[in-house]
Length: 261
Ligand code: 1HE
Image 1 (tube, rainbow, N blue to C red):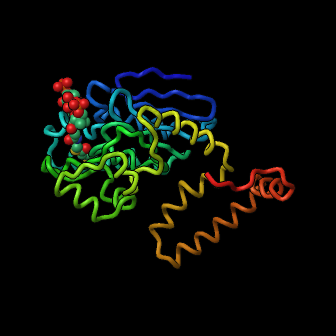
Image 2 (tube, rainbow, N blue to C red; image 1 turned 90 degrees about the vertical axis):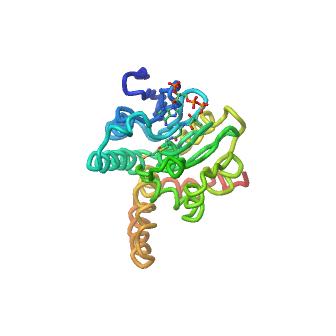
Image 3 (tube, rainbow, N blue to C red; image 1 turned 120 degrees about the vertical axis):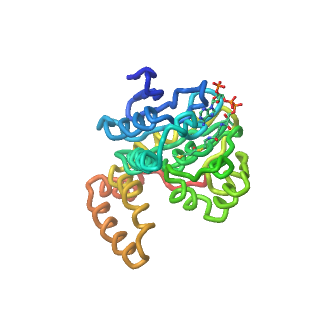
């Protein structure tokens, strides 16, 4: 099932258990205007129950050029506050939505584009990918969640440097720094992301739930509270019939062993 690109600039295609979301404003380098941010939110809030994992990627030569700067000058301070909160809601819908999300990156992953990518659960970059936070040099600040999510990927020091100096990380530097978990040759990030999504879609539902909903919250808790939360979720996960069946399959020699990459 494919919903063609519309005024929202988002194309959603469902391939069996995988939803493939394409930012579809290549002429504007997939800059995120309000319609596109809201369409992303809606797509995750209304994801069909048959979908078990999602991929987000961009049409054209770039993943995403960030906030649509042509909309910036039209807002006063209060509108700016609500606009930033709208982004937070949309990217929370992605991060804490019903399914694990894999971002397939290429070309520019900058500003709000990096904020979007950092809300995903896994990032796959190709060799053309580069990362930047040009907000610093544009005289503005991040507003789409980067101050919370980017330091969790690469640390406060790197984000501070990127914004103070306009530093751009290329694909290899970005992978080493922690922006992406996978680095593939040019043009291959979407295929790799779909392959990973298919794998993820086959996990026990409680495992995916724990990883998308619980793990990031444990990271926000004190160690003491985090350990208790971990025990509670471990107990729930291991009592699920799916978990019992998978463990039994391994013990009977019917499940794959762990093997080196
Ligand atoms: C845009 C945008 C945009 C391109 N808003 N229109 N983001 C930035 O500061 C990044 C700004 N963009 C760029 O640095 C470059 O466009 C790229 C490196 C991403 C791509 O370069 P290139 O040579 O492929 O494309 P281009 O020729 O620069 O742009 C093509 C068109 O897209 C052009 O419009 P045209 O009508 O002249 O064809 C550009 O104006 C347009 N375009 N990027 C609007 N971002 C929640 S807070 C988040 C805060 C931020 O994200 S701030 C960072 C914004």
